[in-house]
Image 1 (cartoon, rainbow, N blue to C red):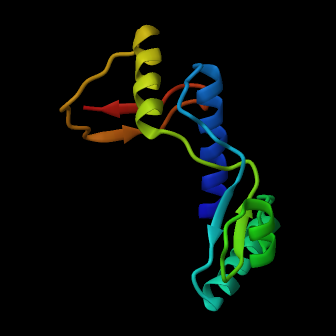
Image 2: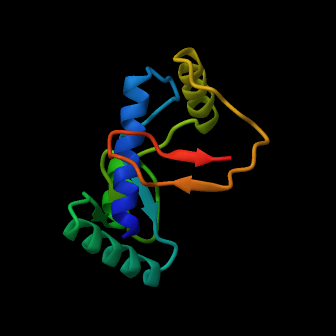
Length: 130
């Protein structure tokens, strides 16, 4: 599901930031999605329940708890995901590219990719056929 993809993407992102010493203003104190209506609050609660079933920590917070813990005044509750957050995408991409170029990775721009070769051992990179 998309939730599992997001979880794996987050793990990969964190590993890249740590392994390549990238300073991308990462703030992983948690991610809050505030509901804009009573219906959206119900839908966010359903999302949180499904995520929790798949091992993704996601909590529903009441409007009172949001105000108490964040100082944000809101009419409806929200979905909180601990450990998730924000980063500066430009800093991430440019610093990752710098680190890879330092390691000898070649960058080709304006090159059409004809297909992706997925047939490889798990420990080898995916090949792009140009």
